[in-house]
Length: 272
Image (tube, rainbow, N blue to C red; front, side, top):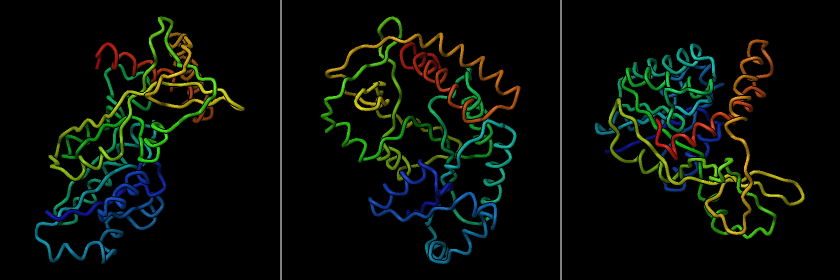
């Protein structure tokens, strides 16, 4: 079956990673920005793109795969309205179409952060409307993979652990693995889990300290941090900030501690 791919969220990180890999593999795809959707409507953009849609009239077996990579908002109702409306509009175009919603790593019933709670609710509603869910971790491109394999930095490196010296892990997803799923058999109303490796969180101290994610633990020193304490404290500080409508970026940053803590529950204890 002939396939073409439409990526929603032209200037987003995930969209660009997917677009570059599709282009690298010679797979036809097209990007649409959120600004274009708001201005013209997603249906008009698709139908006006004659080069992209022309094959619809010549290939009875053509399938169009729409990948929703639009950046999420923790306001659940506005997210539901946005993505479900886009899905409903696209379905009005009488073509063979699959709609894929990009989710986060294992939204759980714990829902310790606003973002993960939103993703959990979005998944359930998307599945009801016959969308396809693709769950992923930290995106890893070909260039990033090469960096992991060839990084010979002599900087002082600390592997962040919990107080029991168990390394903190972050799930990752190779972009090439996502493309394998996208170009394979796609069943509507299904969840595809796309995970590659679990990466360690490394504090690299050179001229300026920075956090990096890597599988390599060679020449690293274990550095314990009270992740559970940080998670609980940041969770309640976030609640206070949200009540007073503080800067959303600060709130999102603080909730990352709880998100990391939840990852450990799932990755080590298999609690989902």
